[in-house]
Figure 1 (cartoon, rainbow, N blue to C red):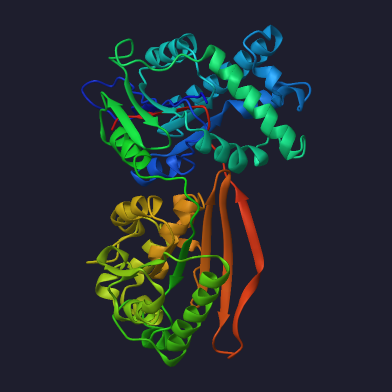
Figure 2 (cartoon, one colour):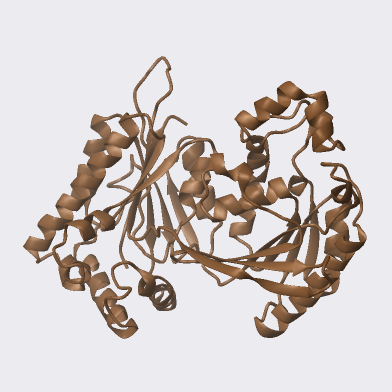
Length: 459
């Protein structure tokens, strides 16, 4: 399978050398699916946006089905080549406008940049604008990985969904891969020695890293070396109701209330069912170090392969407001209350933390979640908002407002074109047991296949 992804960064800072910079990532295989890569970049403080050439191609093609068929990607199809080149040109121009306008720091150019000629064109475009370029190349010759990728990814691709049967889509995409191979020219350690890139081989079995510069490139490399393609689920829940929750006090380190203990018991029943019906035999539990979370986790000990108590999962530090009610805070700190309402994400509690601080301390946790199998995270409202925002691709300014009630379990199942999300509500106070919320959604996210390009700023 062939493909490439490129990351480009634009330098918006004022320095002795105001030259714009760009980082590019390229890869040659659609088994690599860094669907959360923009989120990783956003987590280090740089706005990012995806420019998918396939979307431009589908808009330009007169016949959607024809524009997605394997013959459209044949190097011998000159008419289709014109459409593909124009699609790439429009996407790259929009990418440049996005960066030059100051709207963002990083742009992702998602396209089939399989040839040296195409990559040279992109490099020249970036060089003229002083972007820094970084390629991530994904190489796969493992038939099992390729077959699994075709099954998991392509059947829900906009190129195939509703246009072909699964058998037709499989056959067509295999033919498309063969067309890519005809023109594919991989990154070369000698020919491309001065370029910055990483090669991801057989979905992460091995890597080759060349000339990596800067914090963002390093974070992207770290991300790519930690993701895996194995089926798994991530469960998120707040601790059971605490005694402070009952009286409306924030923070602190109070134990579970009676209803909180009931919730912990209900979680045991839920995961016994998951283990019996979903074959979840390797559940790991990560809990914060607060008493209310630890007590919730301890009830599940017989079902877990292990339990870890992580300080990084503790609730946002409310500083001088710890242990107060909302009414107390408004009375004692009226100015701070207004400031927080005006900018919930960046506001830092006096002697405490902001949501921005919490995101920073959770970055290693989120990266570790990417490389784990089944994990249950038992933590707190602010912490779980940050984790859910990452997997659900929520903007940072929306993060502090994500609903995260008590006694609700969120099940995230990462998939090629998104993250399937289920919510389970446990009606503890009504003593009616656990029931699934009449609310299920599966959000379609962008998938970065073949060649990905990210463009961005100084790092």
